[in-house]
Amino acid sequence: MVRLLVVDDQPAFLRAFADMIAAVDGFELATATTAAAAAERCAEGGIQLVLMDVNLPDLDGVTAARRIEAAHPGLPVVLVSTYLAEDLPEDLPTAGRRYVEKRSLTPRLVRELWSELSEDP
Amino acid sequence: MTAPGWASDTASLRRLQLYLTANTITVTVASALLVVCRLTLVRNGWILALAAAVGGSAALLAVASRLLRRGRPGPALSLAAAANWVTSVIAVAITPFTLAPVVLTLLLPVVTTLPYSSRRRMVITASGAVISSVICAVLARWRPIDGPERLAPRWLLDAIVITFVPLVAALAVFSAWRTHLDLEARAEELRRSRARLVAASDQARRGFERDLHDGAQQQLSAVTIRLGLLRSQLADQPALAAAVDQVEADLSTAVDELRNLARGIYPPLLTQRGLGEALRAAALRSAVPVDLQLPTAGLSRQAPAVEAAVYFACLEALQNAARHSGAARIHLSVKEGAALEFAVRDDGIGFDPATIGEGSGLMNVADRLGSVGGRLAIDAAAGKGTELRGVVPLGG
Image (cartoon, rainbow over all chains, first blue to last red; front, side, top):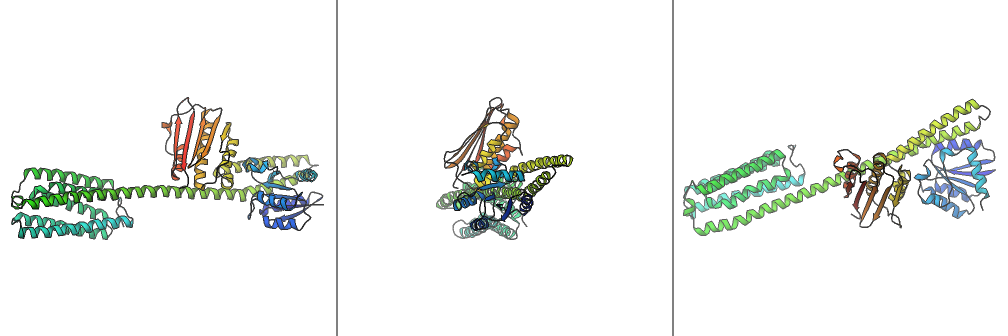
């Protein structure tokens, strides 16, 4: 069972995403609504993939992702938001970070993401 | 209650009050000195008449001062000006040698009330001063009343002229200087008020963008995810699956339109990452290819109003080039030093800058730049492309 942490402060998105993950075999969902809560949840262990919103109430998602990756090497963090990639800061894609538009999230894409990122060294 | 066209701010009214009070005291002292003069040096009845006229003027000035205190600056200053005209004419009629200081005195109401007057009152005040000057000049040459001047000792006449000409000239210059400072302060206050309006409008725009992003866009993303989930469960019902696909496609179009609307209201990148990133994104979206030239070290963050002014100016130029110019290429550059300078040049058909009217996009751009102390220059001609250059001083 893959433990997936979604970090977002938007309840509508969290509910929809939780329902979607419930329909995907092999995934278990944990949620956090702030960067601090996400860091705590990761520190508890067991998280294998993080989906993090670009805008969080306590910190921007890019910085929060960097901190989690620094604290947990090998734990992949994918950034998500409703913005188009072209509306995101230039250093975000160049940092080699995966970015997914929220409306593109489907059961298939989640499986593909996991399959791709879990194979990365 | 203040009459239309008159300054209502306390500092201006206090200054006018001071002017009227000083005037009343000066004229009262002059009237008393004339009486003393009549009793000691110049034993002539006309001097008493002059003392009475000057005394009457002091009384009118006292009434004017009272009117001003009661919040009626218009009638107050009109009365003061009228007292000034009548007294001046009487003074020159009786003592023609006082022409020079008296004519200078006639200018005082004009320069003193200039910043506080409506156009109509200014015309009346200025006309009164000119007409009174003409009457005074004619009386000084005609000398209808002969006597007081011949009886007065020469040194007294010299002393009066030598003392009062520079004194009244200094007063007029001082009043003009105060007027200049007042007008300068008003211009600065207007600029600040324009800057506050633009800042308030930008704050509202940022709020709308955030509301659209955190509200409608998030909800629609959630609906899209649910539709995707529903679609994945309809593999064996092709008709329903096709209907869901259509709803998904329509929803996707709505999300795109909503996002374009939100971005147009206030680009989130401008708030989060500043001018350089926002211009980079705008250049990528441009329908005409853009050569973007930014400082290698990037642009430092500036006040939101400054970043927004330059961003929306460049955006307007990019959109105009794409919509109207038929340009094949646009060059956009931004430099940062003591000022933020930008230039957007296209190779399109150009236009006649004289055709820019009120309410046009470029006029709004110029107003927005002006609100942060900047300015816009348009270099365009039919068939020769268009270049928009702007500069905003930094560190102010």
